[in-house]
Length: 300
Image 1 (cartoon, rainbow, N blue to C red):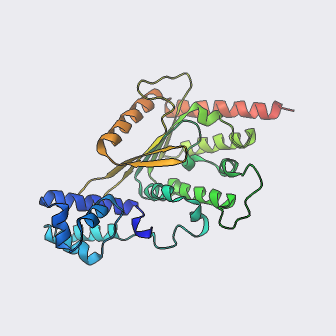
Image 2 (cartoon, one colour):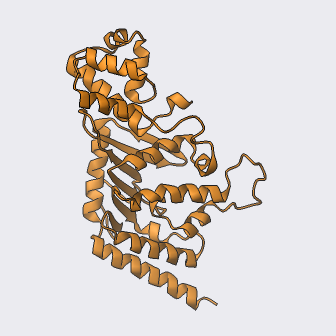
Image 3 (cartoon, rainbow, N blue to C red):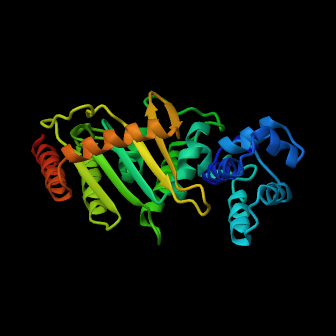
């Protein structure tokens, strides 16, 4: 499974290989002959599921006419990847199911992240108590040592969130349905903590949060839309990597087809235009937080 795991760098490298082939007017089969491999292996490289040696990568690039040393070094850098054997299977990282690992890696490399959420607080914005409430088992915990623990799940999500406060954080923009603010997980005290956490994050320069109230309707895009748009800058010539990630019922789909991504961009634009401004959203969040506080203190 190791060589087939897609990562941000592998996807970027695949785009560069595809760009070189297109520019040189060379087919996948012809490229395969250059490095004495199969057409299917070239196809796997392009979609980010294959691997290639440094020597083969340099030989392919130079034979296709790409001899600039700076460009060749950028290709070699993309080939380097820190997801070695065992990386995802130890410590809190084992809480990331296989389908989620590409998203985690894309987040770590992203320059821009945009999230539209309908029912639950986006993972990158969840406070620790909210995360625990989501992962607490309903019955008796499974004693199986291979089962991911609540603590591992919490630490895994907190680790993902570190990108937002890193030295060079991505631009993060979230559009949240009012349901995200009102749907209770862990009780009212947890919800107050979560909303206060959201308000604190909204004051960071790299984070923009908009709320879509129940009273607002949109044309062609509704509060049921739930997706993430990710942009990863490319050090090469193929241009930035833009992907749409759609999650539903435990299923996650990674979409890099340009028309499909463009369609999601259009939905995003409509949602953003319909949602409250950043300042009005902060006031709305504070209003909901006050409501939870009143209910908490007034309930016997």
